[in-house]
Length: 254
Length: 252
Image (tube, rainbow over all chains, first blue to last red; front, side):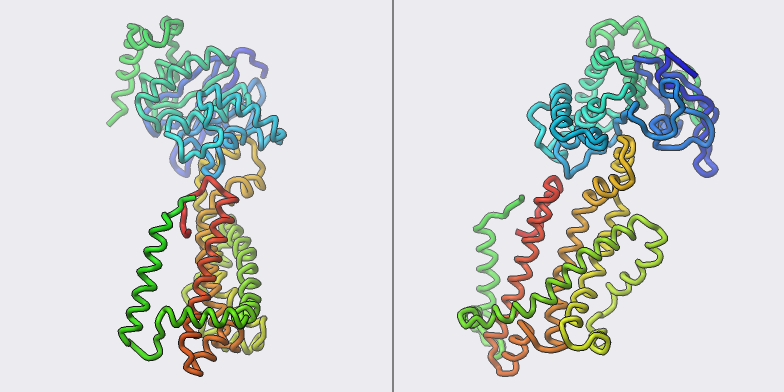
């Protein structure tokens, strides 16, 4: 299967945890160069799907295609950003950011140069030799992001990356993410449970419903994408989309 | 490294040694010398060189036993933490060893290994090893799963997961186990010298007790405590230089 439009496709994914059916016949396409959000109430299997795409979990049935190739384990074409940052507390920011390259056997001086570049890019210049416990939550996630960017994978998988940082930092992150999607020609798959966040950052929002998990709707916000970051939140299509998604989800929230 | 102010350290030393001095002067017991008398005796043992000869003897089983326990203990602990089957097989032995009064085993150890250095090293090992193994295995089992997932998603091999994630992540608890293990090893070394054959510092303690030279006895006990604290400090420094980010500060 060769596919020039979609960077990642999942086809007919089934995943059970014991007797619990987490995903049933899930199929979804993730267009190249765009940000797709997986949005849904907790328990709808969005993180499970993301980890299957990452190759960290094996589906019971179904395939994951990355650039047309079937994948079943982690590969250099995908980088993961974790909800709890997953930084090594014993390693400096520099080593944490360079860790992906370290595992790829890139020479020390070379990987540190690359890491320094991305540390600067995420705005942590001067914190290279700090340790994670010396940083705030927002700064830690910037380290996690720099690590994912430094391996230069075409696909970035983000598992609720901003859910553990405070609201102000989160807004800043969302703006930065929009910028990042514009600048880097990467495909982003973004798991979130925040409707506003999904609509704000996404080119495409896939709404997942629970038990058994399925894609209920795919929404492609379009008109406000080219506006500047400040006016998006006031845009009428933005507000209408948020409202529409909430209406379709509210019956699933106790 | 978190360092406590020197004045506080001096103050707490003054408090403890001061109350020792006063308690002794109050005449609790004729076998309880004052702090100053004991320090005088320690000085005499030092200039006569007796204490160095004694430690040369005591340190042999102690250092050998602690090193054996550290390497074998951490090795077994990591294995137990990684393999459920090995856990079932081995853990009960160490859990029993940790809760059993091991001093009661000394007569058996003498029967098996005689009264030489082998027996003494063995006593150090059985004292030090269980806590090292149990701490290590517990820490390995508690490695945050997101760190392991992180390493896997960035293409690490199984070996790299163990060496670069599991062991560094477990290191604070492994070192906590080593601290307890080293202390237990000191107990083992002295116990062996008191119960098997009087040599080294154990000999100074039991000989000066028999001759009612109580200041020397207290001096010997004091010196072994100081040595144990120094040992733990060295251990902490090793930990700091290996895993700088794990800095929490325990001893100094």
